View 1 (cartoon, rainbow, N blue to C red):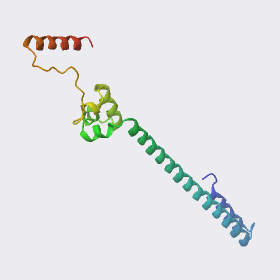
View 2 (tube, one colour; view 1 turned 30 degrees about the horizontal axis):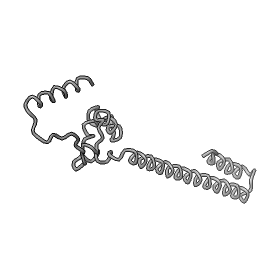
View 3 (cartoon, rainbow, N blue to C red; view 1 turned 60 degrees about the horizontal axis):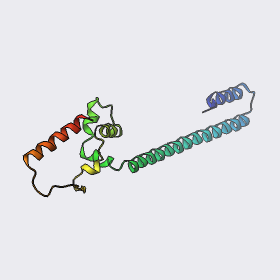
View 4 (cartoon, helix red, strand yellow; view 1 turned 180 degrees about the vertical axis):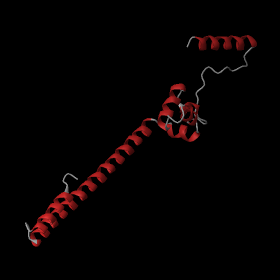
Length: 148
């Protein structure tokens, strides 16, 4: 509260006791101070409640925007894949920062890794590969992995 109502009420009481104010005038001033104090208190409570509601709505909007921008988040969270990241640094990661740590280590889109996702196969061999072809393919893959 911006005003010190108790000290003002105490002053009114002293003035009544000292005879500087009539009892009637003291009651009038006391009631006016009490009403003003109650109004200010109620206004502060409503303002705090309103600000809290706005903050909650803003947080919900931010969370919804995050979920819209990262549709794989819920699946990763529910699968438990984020738990190692949350535990790795002694609880410093929450679900959201663990998600970004996971994505940094797994840049492939989660949708492509999930069961049932359609994968288009190109250049699928029609016949089994010979041993030489398998060896050449493995060497090419190893060489490609080494260049990253």
